[in-house]
Amino acid sequence: MKKGFIFDLDGVITDTARYHYLAWKELARGLEIEIDETFNETLKGIDRMSSLERILTFGGKETAFTEAQKEALAVKKNKQYVELLTDLSPADLLPGIADFLAEAKKQDVPCAIASASKNAPMILEKLGVADYFKAIVDPATLRMGKPDPEIFLKAAAAIGIKPSEAIGFEDAQAGVEALNLAGIMAVGIVSDSDLTETTLNVNDLRETSVAALLAY
Ligand code: BG6
Ligand code: MG
Image 1: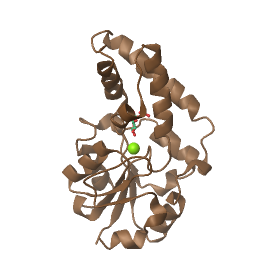
Image 2: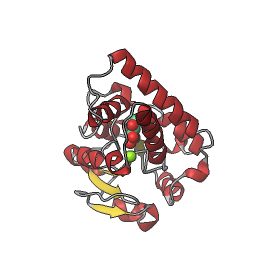
Image 3: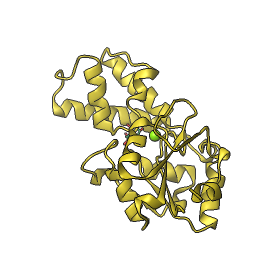
Image 4: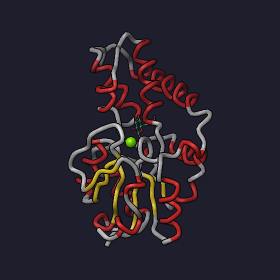
């Protein structure tokens, strides 16, 4: 029997993965680097500075900028990203999420957020679901990002359950790898990507239920 749920945010709770892509694409274009959706898959789940490093390496510009310039580029991307989120509201929750969280709360099943995003608390507030989560792991406290298991191990500990008692929801292969390394059952949200090494994949949470998942 499982006892708690751990959610990634971008691409699982809401479709902000799309806005990350748009903001990175515009920043990269300004640096004369063209990225496409296939390359973008490799950025999902990866923290802000590491994403920038990957883009620069992809464009053959990994040594073109100082640390201070890279910081400024990351700030610029985030400014653009946050602007794209201006109108984010509960209507932007992905299908099935609101009902699933409400049911978990009703059954007293603890939920946590394990996202690389430093914008997570603000996004959860805008979506109107912040109160459903007993814990939000602060990515600034991590030694290693996904695919390292640290973030998911911290999330499980924060809601007082063992990794083997948790179920994690992910839309990114790096996140699935992190869940597997943590010993946490992985459920893939696969609306626009293929995920391997998950226990099960669903298009959205309407295809399963709290009761069905707790029985694993
Ligand atoms: C992850 C996203 O959830 O958060 C990545 O999948 C993103 O695309 C990362 O880069 C960091 O987010 P933020 O909001 O701190 O720049
Ligand atoms: Mg994600």
